[in-house]
Image (cartoon, rainbow, N blue to C red):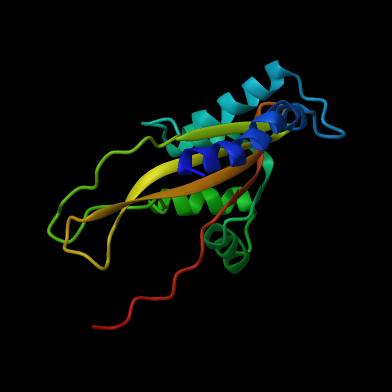
Length: 177
């Protein structure tokens, strides 16, 4: 049997199952009552948070007063300073601690530009944004970048961001030189 015939034999069952898989993926989440218009509105609120040129005040305007933060860096700041999650957000952002990946490599070489909003999905009251960015390759010469993806997920209620998750970690301090 040729390679093509083997591939075809393997692909036919998958192609036959595609309509059933599409139906499963489009089925609404139990208990979810969000309409397509609500999902679109939720997407727009989350996208506005990452709009190029958005200020800290622009972002604060999108947050619900009861905003809950799951990013460990912001959460640690809130606990250590005995402030609410929204107050921690204000303080860390005012210090220029918005995070982000990448930055210039040693020697000042800038990373390639990616699509900061590579994928945006919404389901019920959750919106997830997958960001494409570039990071310095620590195993290669300065100015060598690799493509990396990060995410932010928000719960959106009544046009406000009420809760946030991402994959951030608290990095150990840099070793003394």
